[in-house]
Image (cartoon, rainbow, N blue to C red; front, side, top):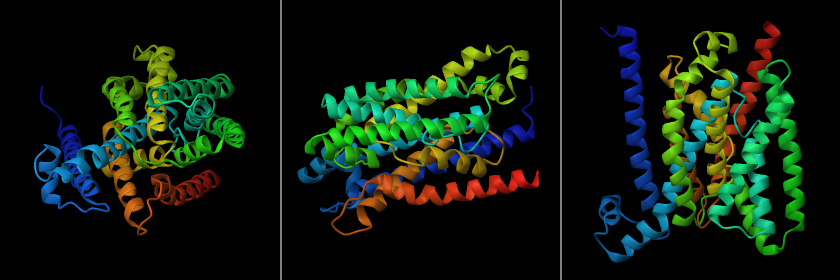
Length: 339
């Protein structure tokens, strides 16, 4: 059976974009590893990754800078794919996990573990997952009235996120100075001082979640047509929505546990990916790669913009994402007024 020209062109464009993103990630990743108080020539980075070259370069790259770079890549990949899942499921560009409260729930649970238990990386990951899933379930139940409206879900999510942020602030007021510093730095969204302990839970989760998200693409495409059309295609709508929500929440929760709520990555990555592809595709993997590139570049800017100061990566992503949110809200309001 011959593949139609339009399908072939779409696949070719997608493959080209993914290839270019992979190359860009490789270059920015090597640049991120090479930049620091002790600069390492880019030409020496591949050898250092293999344990070759000067011992101090190997130590700097493998033990100090590489965990941070890998953590940023995986966090961006997770947030980008999570944003694409939520926005496609609700069919609204505002429905990213940081807008509808999922990351707020994951953050509140993680801060609770930091303040009360002094949790480590694995405990933080599990707490963030439980908090994110619980928040998603609460928002879904509160917004469900004879079906789900995208705007109702967003408004309920914003309200729940505000309540959870207030609870997080209360926890911070009760924390001692050590836990307060740790939680405060984490809440900004930071890759500072990340090591393999923080990377390991996220990496293990991504091994399962990325293939799971790609497997669920067909169900997500069906759900975009509406519940009735999805049922006509043979989908079990309730089970499909549940599985997709669990994967989307888990991606955001594990990313939040590893680096804190790095704002606007999930919100920005998917719309950019869909516009670059220009073919109406879900763009799950492409959104993830755009998210990874965004976090990697933002972290590089955060480390080098001010001499002697390493800003949290969330500061830079916030500066990028906030104007886009304002523009999207203005555009949406104008569209509704014209309608």
